[in-house]
Amino acid sequence: MKKNALLAAISSVGSIKLFAKNLGISQQSVCKWKNKRRGIVPHGRVLDVFAISGVTPHELRPDLYPNPTDGLPKNFDDNQKLKQITALE
Image 1 (cartoon, rainbow, N blue to C red):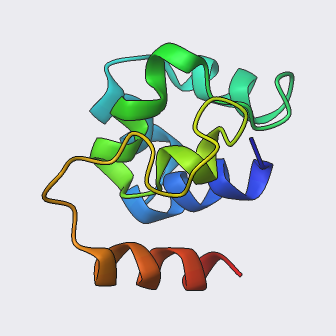
Image 2 (image 1 turned 180 degrees about the vertical axis):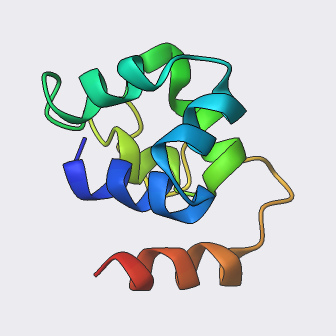
């Protein structure tokens, strides 16, 4: 739910344009999430954003994914997750 998590997701892909393209949505939609929704990713897009960026569902929407491992696939590497979490801090 942090704006920083959305910004980290966008940054990991490279740009808003690439981020939107990878999600199959418009750049305007991403800008709306960033500005009008204050960085809140819609609940139906959290796992898609995770898939393209590696930013965890917990980081994106802790209100929906309260535990750090919620929404992560079973084969997700804990070291990879730790690297991502510490990179945001």
